[in-house]
Picture 1 (cartoon, one colour):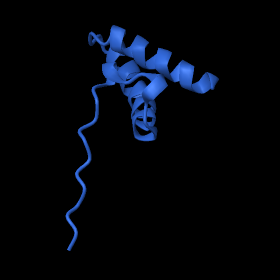
Picture 2 (cartoon, helix red, strand yellow; picture 1 turned 180 degrees about the horizontal axis):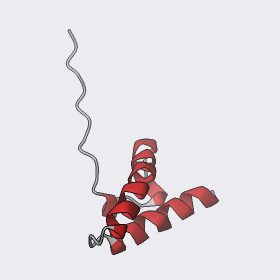
Picture 3 (cartoon, helix red, strand yellow; picture 1 turned 45 degrees about the vertical axis):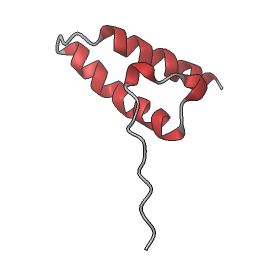
Length: 63
C-alpha cells in the first residue's frame, strides 16, 4: 500500500500573490473575499488583508 502524499499547509492569505498562486490558492482567495467583506462590515480589523485579496484577484481577473 502506497503512503498518501501529504499536502503542504496552505499559505496565509497575506502571502498569496497572483504571480505564483496555485489553482487551490486562487480558489481560496475567491472564497475568502465575501467573508472578509462581512468581517469588515462588522467592524473587524481586516481592511489591509481585504485590500490585498482584492488586489490579487484583480490581477488574476485581468489575465
